[in-house]
Image 1 (cartoon, rainbow, N blue to C red):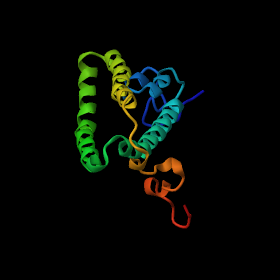
Image 2: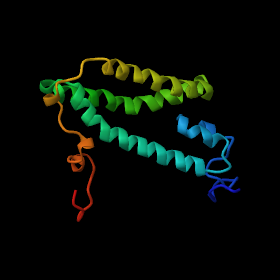
Image 3: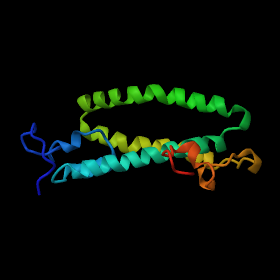
Image 4: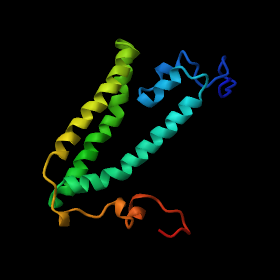
Amino acid sequence: MPGLVLPAHPSGRIVPPKTAAVQPPSLLRLPAATAPGGYWLVASFFLLGLCGAGQTAAAAPFMMRVFPRGKRVGYITLSNLALGPLRFVVPLIAGLVSQVFGYGVLFAAAGVFPLLALLPLWLIRLGPEPPADDVPPGPADGRTWPAYLPVPVGMSP
């Protein structure tokens, strides 16, 4: 089965199976290493986009629930300021790791670090629940989706 055709590539595929492993690390991209063409890669980017959109929509209500009412703006600003430089620096570090240690270490780190990122969430879950009147309504209540997702013109929320 031929892959998606690109005239500039000698094999006629978007990503040949031997070079698919050098794509940016993600567990969703691993099947592309053995795929006959680039279809797995297209599907993995689609799934990663869905995950990113879901995380973006869930982050604000989660932070509103975790942080105290009087300090929410400061905590949300601090978390965004901390994440901004990381979005620039982490790909540079990943490129350096892949050049110095190889792609095996890079893929192992890409599997371990997301698990380490879940540890603070596990600790937060064990903490006390905030009072019910301190938690603002989130997108799950069905009333606030337009605040989180763009609504096309002409559609009523």
